[in-house]
Length: 127
Image 1 (spheres, rainbow, N blue to C red):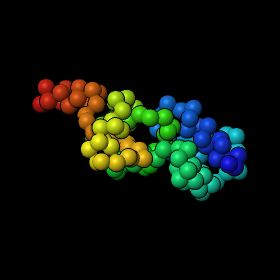
Image 2 (image 1 turned 45 degrees about the vertical axis):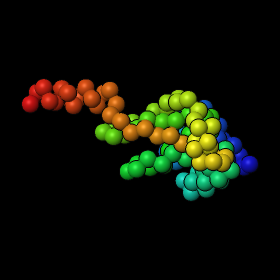
Image 3 (image 1 turned 60 degrees about the vertical axis):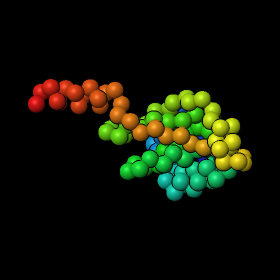
Image 4 (image 1 turned 90 degrees about the vertical axis):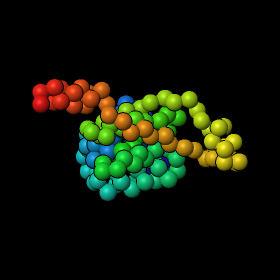
């Protein structure tokens, strides 16, 4: 693993946020001022391909990157806020239903977050 890949993995593992490549790039620039965005993308692709980092695909939003620790996500359909959520592990149930083993799964729930619900209710009351 290159020094850049190690640092990127460290940034992702040490973050409680779901960082974009650009956000990772800005953090990398602090330690490696000569790094270019393409290097960050190349290393992120390699880290994702090898299973060291997890890519989160959210429609209408740039890819986000996350730890590989088993967890799921909730995404607000209004503001796009992405949050970790811990559901019980469904691997055995999915495998039983499919009749075979699975490599992994990523559960993403779309909803409207409490802040957006409050704002929508406030707007309705003001109308």
